[in-house]
Length: 51
Image (cartoon, rainbow, N blue to C red):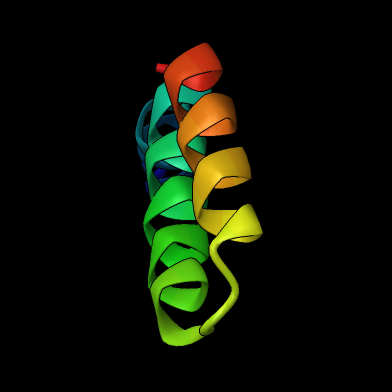
């Protein structure tokens, strides 16, 4: 019973949109830490395509 409830909650929380938001958030943090401007431009392009 409890396993079924946890499994259902996990599937609802880990949807594609949530995974994309988490990934973009982490990548955005890493991109801002670098001095290179090329990765900033590339990240904005990828972010726009995924949102």
